[in-house]
Length: 101
Image 1 (tube, one colour):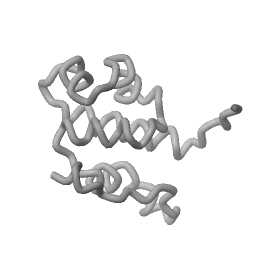
Image 2 (cartoon, rainbow, N blue to C red; image 1 turned 45 degrees about the vertical axis):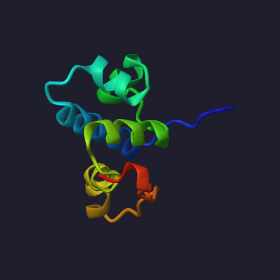
Image 3 (cartoon, rainbow, N blue to C red; image 1 turned 90 degrees about the horizontal axis):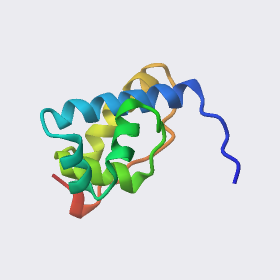
């Protein structure tokens, strides 16, 4: 499978996501959050650093649940700049009942 290069908007969105997750993690260790989310610490590190700009939805849902973030809030935070620039969102996030905070 060939992956297309990310657009500048996707890269920027990935950086905003990483910054949001770092802020939400606060003083908790990366290891603690990764293990509680059932992902590897390396995966969390790459997402937080912006190296993985388009992580899988279940991965973000698990991290958000661990950090007590609603998926609506995550989407609003990372897509806000795009909406103000007039772009249409490329992902619609539906809240799963088991992930509601």
